[in-house]
Image (tube, rainbow over all chains, first blue to last red; front, side, top):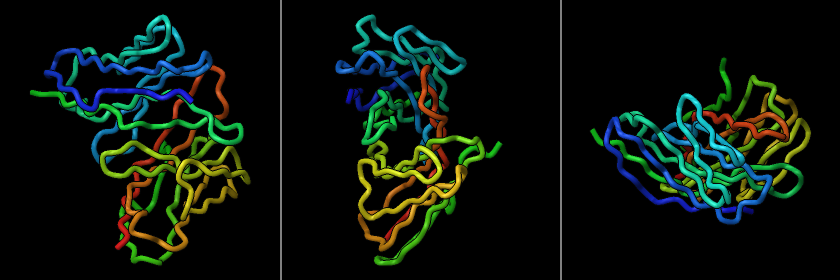
Length: 113
Length: 115
């Protein structure tokens, strides 16, 4: 199962772009990269996911390197409400045929006023 | 659109008591799962279900039972609560096995304290 490595914490100035890196060097060819975030005392929230092409939605952009061994989540104009723990996740396979998500410790992003 | 609904939001139990955390989803999702999150840590999978009548163990199943009698409901039972089960519990659901990937929807969490 592919595992991910993220920095423990990052700061970002309000209004600037937040770039959150993630390493997943053991990712296999059919595994997707997912990003979730968890604002304090709330359930995790889906942000974006991708396989090998860069993706963009209303919340963020996801840049995946050509070798797929790392990715970067970009919040283009961070606001104070983006302060959260951000999880980079690669789909894993547990016993049986189901695919579940394995959450690591994530990156605590603090957006500073 | 209710999504994933968990109850109760907060609960205090005494050691040895039993209780059930309820989870319901109204999106007709096949897959449902329960995670626990301890302070400063990521989510760990307790049990999951790939459809009504089918359940399986996740990473940390000991001390918990689940059942899936309907597509909508996936209750988590603590048979004899222990202080080590003090945690925040999240229920989640998603659609079936993806070709293009899919998202997971989480409930708002249930804060459980065992004293």
